[in-house]
Image (cartoon, rainbow, N blue to C red; front, top):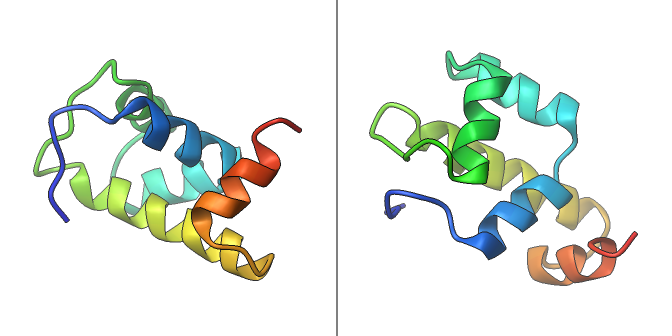
Amino acid sequence: MKYSKTISDELKDILKSCTTVAQRKEVAESNGLSIHTLNSIITGNRKITTKNNKCISELLRVAICNAKEMHFSLLDYYQDIKYL
């Protein structure tokens, strides 16, 4: 997957809405990052680099799996939960 230097507003909202804090923490730790670093990347305060892009990809996979568990596509799942 190819990324720009920062995450778009829509992807930021999707990653935050469609994953739990515990999931983000687990993904961060499994990729050698702190939850604070991952949150900074998601919010755009840190740039995406070759060192951390795998973490973002894995977090996106977690979000997709969460949507699949609810029998939604990721965008439909996001639209359904973003106003909860």
